Length: 139
Image 1 (cartoon, rainbow, N blue to C red):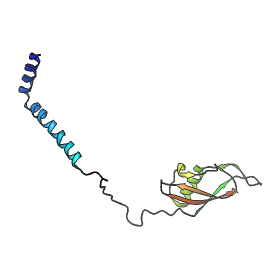
Image 2 (spheres, helix red, strand yellow):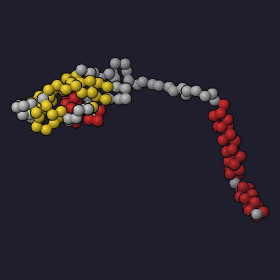
Image 3 (cartoon, rainbow, N blue to C red):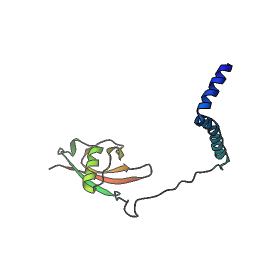
């Protein structure tokens, strides 16, 4: 066991950088723990910066009316259906705003009749927009 200690001391004698690291590292850890424990508990302060100029970030989607043409029979039933992908495409053409199909909420499922249907766009956790989809028969 004594020979291991002698061997370690010989290695440390050849490497002053390693000796400095062995001394400085525990001191640095103790300082960081001391600063962490001495800081008062509470909410951290966060700086927020809004890079969007005022009035430039607003997009008007509420009460928007979108017309979608689909093939339909004489009784008003569609051959196929209007899905959230069709509504996203129609919204992109009508307003120029690209909306993902996952953001379009259709609780009753795809639209299968001609008529006007209220649709909710769930754009963010706190942002919802109501639009009206008008499904018409294709000529």
